[in-house]
Amino acid sequence: MDPIQTERLILRPFNLEDAPFILRLLNEPSFIENITDKGVRTLEQAAEYLAQGPLASYATHGHGLWLVQHRTTGNPMGMCGLIKRDSLEEVDLGYALCPEFWGLGYAREAAEACVTWGYDQLGLRGLLAIVSPGNAASIRLLEALDFRYIETRDFTPGDPVAVYRRILEPT
Image (cartoon, rainbow, N blue to C red; front, side):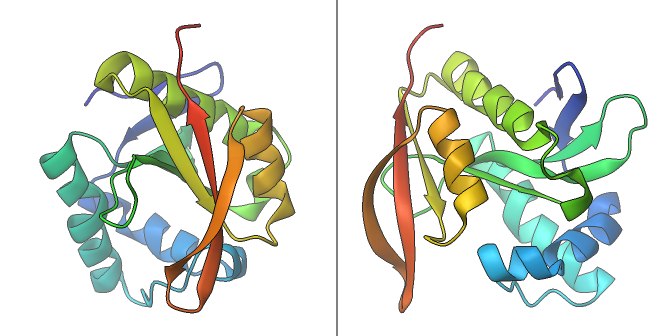
């Protein structure tokens, strides 16, 4: 998978050397509150998360979460990508940025790039996105990206999520 470049960002496949950044991102209070606590507390666990998550997804599905980097500085900012989950009937758009990059349009830029890539490279005609019902910022982003609410369901027992869907069409 070649990196995706936007005006301000590079989205590239993760590698094991990204473990220190993943350790930080997965332990952000906002990640734990709005997404989940992955229980990753050491560099070894972060490397295992990468190996069993994004890297395994690339090998199995040809896509997954990518590292989002600032195009000029190369600094890691978060992750964004397309995830095939057994519990969902379509591919899922996922994203998480470190809080210092919120509110600057980076999540939208990264997500739009992934949606376009999914349509152009994978031939996807629909995408899902799941979000905690109380995560107003992510809901606004999904709606700005033309995702529409379809239902609330328990993604994991006792953990309801709002499910959004977007139909993909040529631009």
